[in-house]
Image (cartoon, rainbow, N blue to C red):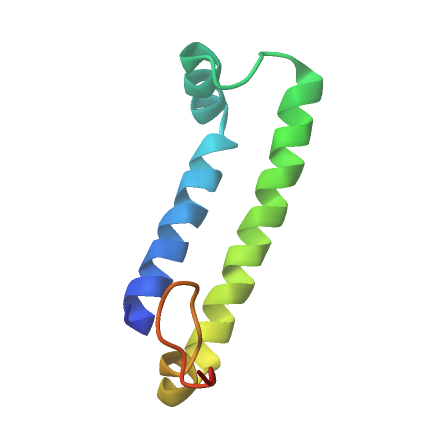
Length: 86
C-alpha cells in the first residue's frame, strides 16, 4: 500500500467519525440499531470518537513526516519482512 493511499483511508475514517458525532449521524445510527438513544451512550460514543479522530490524525502526521524507505521497510503480519531471519 502506498503512503498516499494509507493517508486517504485514515482521512475517510476521520470523516466517518465526524459524521457519526453530528446529530443526523447519531440519529441514523440509532435508527439502524447500532446504538441506543440515550445521553450516556451518546456522550461515551462521542468521547471515543474524538479519541479515534486524534489517533488517526496523529497517524496521518507520522506518515506524512516519514521517509519513503521507512514506510516500505515496515513488517506486516503475513507478509515478508526484511528484518526477519529464517
